[in-house]
Length: 474
Image 1 (cartoon, rainbow, N blue to C red):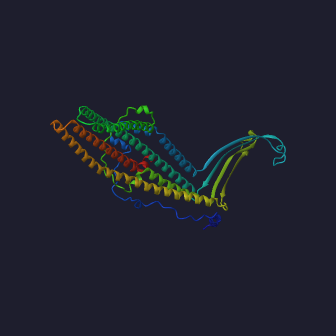
Image 2 (image 1 turned 120 degrees about the vertical axis):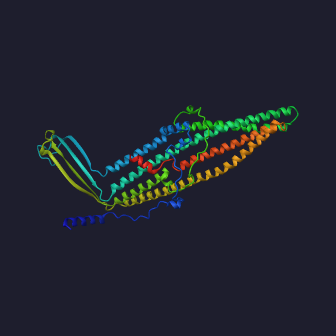
Image 3 (image 1 turned 90 degrees about the vertical axis):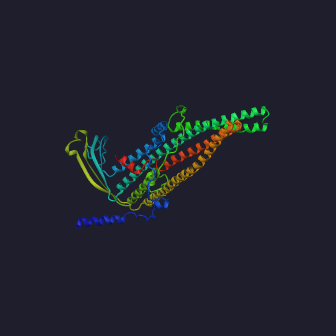
């Protein structure tokens, strides 16, 4: 080994030994294992398109979703955070490149007679001129710039995933409000039928009381359900107006624009493999992906904090002109140049660097804890929607059986009425029972659609980390 190289190596070793001591950190927190959260390898769940709501083939819903995604202030804020994170990446990347600058200044001043300038300069009022190009470069011997860049990239990807999560949440909120409005309006229509049947039955009983065929107790019994049905009608009307207001707020338009919106509740979709809790979930939930990228960014921040304990070597150089008087500024004899390295070596920092490293390590542990919580929440959320759909499927069988029985009873009541074996009150009662069962079936259908929307949201709503990464790389 050449003597110069040996001397340089020994000098560098001495500098490293002389650096402020790096504290020993506790064992870093670890991300939760997928199997610990209940995830497994297997057939992926149902695949959804990014515009998953289009599967319902409802033009009004499509228009509301597109407007909400384009005009929402919350999504605009999310896009701004992505842009800010992208600027952070550019800034971190620039730190690894040399800085080149130009400066020029002109100063009119009186030179002191007791300084370095002899007469006739001393005591004279002169013009001092300077112009030069400077260069500085910070050598990254210990990976600080690379860690800073990787941290910024992690924050950028986390911001992108956050924006996708906000988009998914907004689209699911619009769908929930839209389908709830449809269920409310369909319920109001069935309720009108119930009120009409009850009113007709009450009118018949009242005439029978006047004819002496029934008593006042029969009249009170026939009239009793009507106030409750009227109350439900007023409640459904107010609920419909509130849902229109909510949709207007979500889609950033005045409530009057949706005053005539009157959707109908669709049938539930036929989803395939809707009960699969697999590893695929970790790459499809944008909130989980965002939490994982924050773990990566925090890990890189710990590396940056460690490099603060090591020497920092930089090189500066300049070249330009300096003169007394503007007329001599650009002459060759006014030229000046220089270059040289500089060394920053932390020796005694009063514990600042140690505290900074420990604090950064604690933030990394917190990021891991947040990721673990996001994974567990994603599994719970998805599992709850699966359980709800299974239960609703079983309930649907019972509701269909009850509706079939009510329809059959109505048919028999009509046959008896047509044959003159019973009065119209029996037929009206049977018809009212059918409408009541239809309302129950409608509520169940609304719950099924709601649970499916929740499941599509819980499974990422068509978003995937791979597809998002490919799109952003273009």
